[in-house]
Length: 290
Ligand SMILES: Nc1ncnc2c1ncn2[C@@H]1O[C@H](COP(=O)(O)OP(=O)(O)O)[C@@H](O)[C@H]1O
Ligand SMILES: [Mg+2]
Image 1 (cartoon, rainbow, N blue to C red):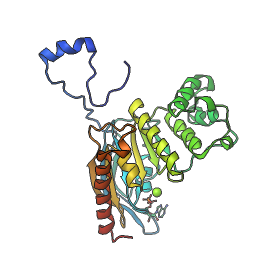
Image 2: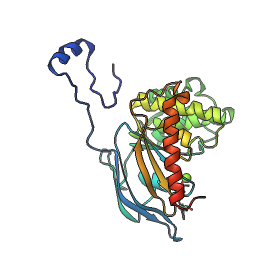
Image 3: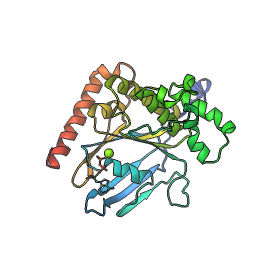
């Protein structure tokens, strides 16, 4: 009990048989208010670079969306705009399900994980994770249960007193994810978070992020240039192309697929990778290739 079900009505087992007699089909619960809507967003930098052109994107609760595309196609620019960290040159961005602060951007509902873990070296793991709550003026004592919960979701319960220098690259990234999750965001933005890690660590962290998405109900927008990573993680993939950055294709993947330990070697995964590679090749071709 107490778990959040994705798009499914939760019915107590004892009631189930009764309900089945009367209502053979249980209508899935679907939130109508999206978490995020971008409408025809374009972004031109002052040096003349058109980083984004006419990008429209709607993200609903429960989605795991990858933004996939070659370097320079505007993925980071798009993510910064989604986070409210960068303005648009034209078009609109809305966060219909969020509380909007004085700056016109969501407050506390969106967290960002960057490629570098960006931990404060003089602070312990616990105090690094505490930082966003400290900035929100939550006392350390009140924050402690949430810090411990966030550390548990990334498997670092026993490392609260450690300093960043004592941790491996993968563990530092886990701390960074815990720090992003401690505010219980609705939307987690990740910008190539595992690109600097070795393949084995990266696969482990992929599994952790998938578990976190399943268990907490957070929605994720994950920037990557890896076909394999996007195919493994996503419920939906938005393939982008460059010069100017825009959306090439937007499609659902892994519908109804159980992404457990066997998934990486399954026929389903192979097919998803093929589908994604094909789309990315099309995006590179349209943009003049590399
Ligand atoms: N602050 C900036 N000023 C000028 N040009 C920028 C700035 N940030 C990004 N760009 C340019 O915008 C384009 C998209 O960049 P970016 O969003 O970082 O792409 P990606 O994350 O897909 O690699 C690139 O051509 C990049 O050089
Ligand atoms: Mg980038």
